[in-house]
Image (cartoon, rainbow, N blue to C red; front, top):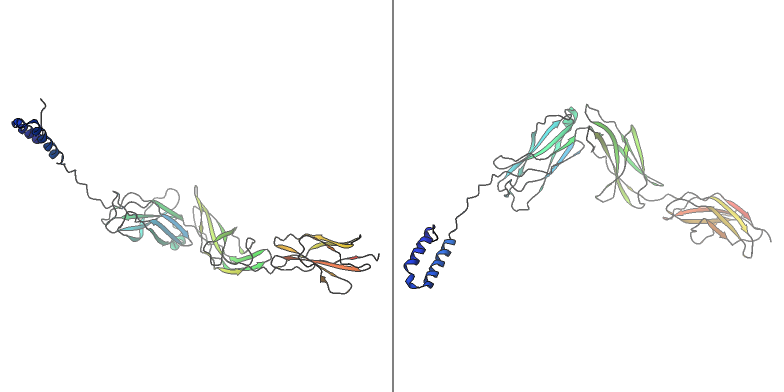
Length: 381
């Protein structure tokens, strides 16, 4: 016989035995009702512990230095360490430590704080920013690096783990270049500025100074670095040949300090110079052609054959040919620009001496001066 340990099943079996006289169908129905009743009696699980309300750590902190200002950016936590949304306001502590050499002991100090707002939905995340002026640190020469971290605290003041760190070197930067000027040249824009040597300080970092020539189209947001030049002493000139004519540009100069430690290296930008603008209008004519020669060619249709050395300007459109006799003024004898450095002149008369010169014309219609003249005599017969 099978033992029945559950009280409800035991009582049901006993009742079934007492009423066997009522029929087997009644017995089966009674057992089914008892089993269904038993299965519906669920035992509740253990209650979940309350959330510790500790925000997740900040793991994407970035520190970027420009001149004497450090800009910090990071994503604010929206969840606690146990996966719950942050329901109560906390705070984010911006902390900084100083390091000199490879084995410095870091002591972080809070330099500012920001509120950590409750998260209203699962995908709630925002980018937070903070700025730190390091002017005093640069002047004192107290360290080689400033190291930053963001400590997220819950409403109860608790925080979790060690957030990531980001550092910037405390090296000197060149002051913004002065007297920046631009002017047009036949092959581009000539940029010039004055430079000054930076103050030096004791450091474990090796440094080198340079300038970035920056350019963008007037009204555009994106800029390009045209050239990076080593810093010298005095004035610096640079010819930008990568422009397009008939467009407006803005230029400025960004000083750069390149630094290197034992196993790390990078660069820090100083403050930008003033911005200057220029409209790149091409009013520069090509160089006058050279090597002009004139040779009479006899035959049924006699002509004087003119040849010269081709110009090398990239924006060359063609050439014009001028002719005169005696003391007359030169007259252009071609109706359209000549594309190749050769021109046959059939409009000649026997016994005449003709003088020729050639000019070059660019795509914007700028015409060069006349080449050196050459002459040829047409035989009388």
